[in-house]
Length: 190
Image (cartoon, rainbow, N blue to C red; front, side, top):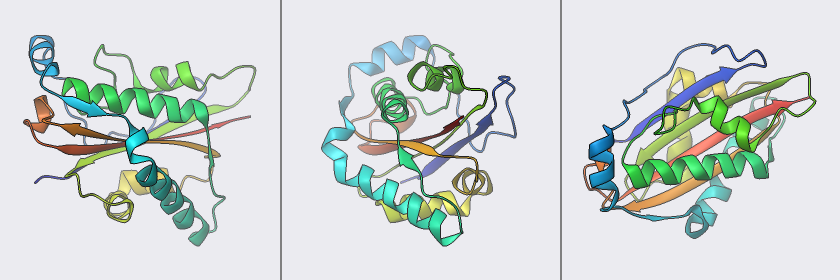
């Protein structure tokens, strides 16, 4: 089974996109999405609580080992990651942007607002794999990818949200397979 990670690098306060996308996949055509969405059974990350905790611990262990501050979990970033991961599993696409074309940073901003801060930056790592994927394997895949590694090692991050979702008979790019999709949203605001 193919294991595909994806990464979106940082977007700063002025909204300019920085760096490049590692593996962006096109959004499934609207007609195909509607037809396929009825086929997927998606279970929220609540059933994968342990995997979420292990991914968070893995990210922080990696950051500590490299002299970086550990990240605090953010309810807003958790909600952003959860919404996006559930949508991808239900609609059968794998991309940072939402199915309706909303840019990833705009989605995150909805859940993790700038408020009155002068500095706001967000980023995202994603992957999908067979249901047996572990947090250690997710970390290995991200570390092996320069773009994902850059996100993991960004010294500006202060918070993180994690969402793992199990999709049974996932439509679209998942070809009806049973998969786990993981999204990690990174953020900092001051």
